[in-house]
Length: 336
Image 1: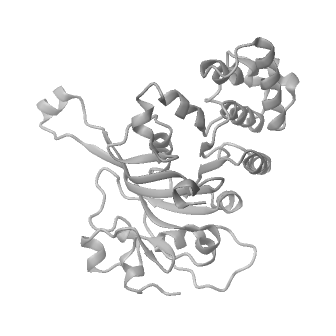
Image 2 (image 1 turned 90 degrees about the vertical axis):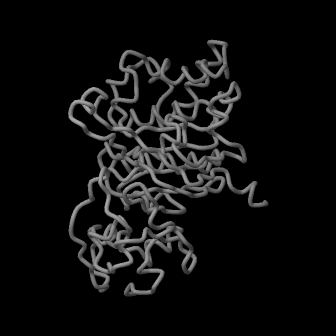
Image 3 (image 1 turned 30 degrees about the vertical axis):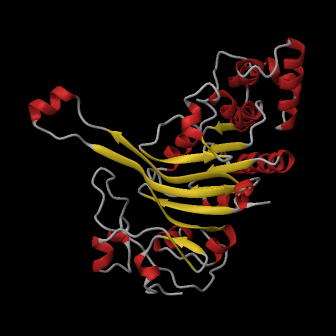
């Protein structure tokens, strides 16, 4: 398979800036300038067909904004997103955009908020079938809803119930069934297990892996839980203050993390046995995104910072088969 056929999703220099200024009159009276928040600032990645890219990082790093950009809920300020070789954001604005939306679906973080409490499970799952004109015959819709419920480990008899009659894990299964109704190729999963108990998380993740194998689905999986990411991903991208700082295949990233921020995240995972590797403590908190540091945004917390880090922003480049944005890695100042 050639590379254009192998790559299903390609984001190029994707950026989103929000205007979080006070109302115009307040700014005039108080003589305050506009305030812009760069939620995502130049993110680029590719996802192969049938594979999973996981985006990880602390809260507020821009992961969920990337998710909403890819499904067309946000318009990018800069950059673009290609899906199966076509400009997705341009297509979303046209009549043909409905066909594209059938192929790109999203599973939201909170199963308590993403399901209409006044609708039965049947109505929830049947809605995309009707809206996208996939099925119109009531009997065919009933049968398809039952098949979708069974595919996520629920009973076809659950169609008559309301969301409040289910546990959190069961509600998330209903959300997945709804997303699968249009037979998508690409699922954007925005922390789909973060609101669930650990034991239920494993059940939902196993269902998602089984569905990926069965339907050859491609996933963008967003999470702050590295244990979950290790279970589901093929590639991992680490985000910090709206930008990718490291992008590598799962095994490489977990075995030999390069960026100091990635190492900090992995060091925070509790381990049954000490590996013997020296731990590098990284102090501090995520800076205010409205006033990010100059140069490398991680430099106030980095133990390997120098003058260049404070003044020049690193670009994502390939070093030893890993994409990394770090002057210390480029200059080989990082300990092994």
